[in-house]
Image 1 (cartoon, rainbow, N blue to C red):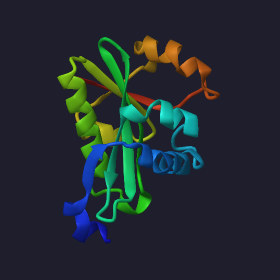
Image 2 (cartoon, rainbow, N blue to C red):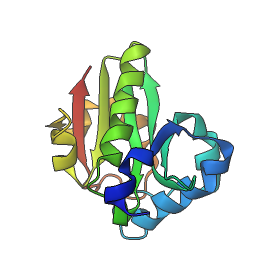
Image 3 (cartoon, helix red, strand yellow):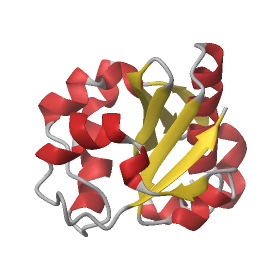
Length: 160
């Protein structure tokens, strides 16, 4: 399958149990390069219901990302990963848009992402913010991260 000829066959869907290993592998491929935080298999299974995946025409999971609710008004788009050879073909955007649509449908007012690629999120209507404006994230999860308080990820926020 080539990205240019098979784009119409890529399927965006909710993650299933059979996607867990592929999600783990995608995320940890980028984590090994320092581009995102690693996830254990336990974390993937615990949060599987948060995830959307994109599958190719052979059924292989080639992209993933999740909407993780933090509070009544706030959710994070996290673990967004697209197989390297398929980046730039709109797969990440499709996942983010699905997350935003879900967030809107369930009544959330704000979505955010922590990223090393703010330009990607800016194209989708996010704006840069100080991570300290997201105290539920910082004190709910970030403080447990080995990179805290020296994390250099950029907070990107979008009002829904």
